[in-house]
Image (cartoon, rainbow, N blue to C red; front, top):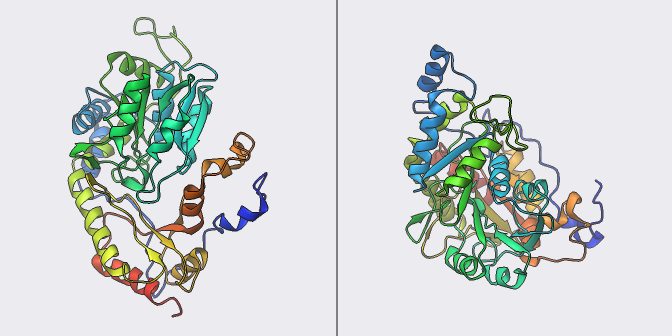
Length: 393
């Protein structure tokens, strides 16, 4: 494996290749799969019957309006992915080269790439060990005259401590763009996340709590941001002359077919969140007494949706994280390693050369998540936990 500029002492912390998972006694448990048990088929057939399968069609508008209402936003702008949603939102702020965006080092690369797309500069902060989210105390230390945006990420469905971030943003006149890709339905002090800041970005990839297969959404109360992002996702076509373009835009449209599935999924959001939380409570009950296994956090004043049920592995557990993943794979159980921090990613190693984010690095070295689908059964969870509890069988 080519580790690029990553110092040799950190190579062992990078996760091993995903183990091959074969069915065990005729069964395989996926790490996450969509739960399609509502109106998905009916709505898609309606698209086909009406011959509206592209980005035109009533389901796009219905999904936008329903999702915006769900997160208490005035506007929802559907698009092709969560990455596109972050890109659209940042583009609407008209950032200039050298403008800085503060984000956690421990996140998926989809959060940082759009910052590069708009020519801004990513500035990283470490995580805090109790929630695995960005350390809000470090955010204040990283603010400069060039800072324009704070970009908190609600990691694995656990809300960030938003009040201090919002206070900093108000004090320094900054925008707050929430990456809520993993946190549909999560609550912070009783308020749904995604619209606590200036804007929010969501993903509807197949493993998210609600899915449209691929897709994303920007939510905002700002009519200018809504207008700009609608244009940005559609080549910035003029509203009057079709092939006259207002600025450089992208093809980030969501199709009517995708929106039909998304709307059907949104109708089931409360149940999916309840299922995820119930599954998490079962996992925690079965795993919490195993020495060397740390279960995921849920802080006070928040309601996590446990998008993925992640655990940390350490001594005295007899296997390493990668060995445990191999053990689970042999029993037909698929898992996924935690995010690799941004400063360790090859495209960003030169930019962040010499920077250290110890908590993010530790999460990367010890963490992975277990099967987390909303449709998991109690019997499946018990089986997964029994395999963890018996590492030598």
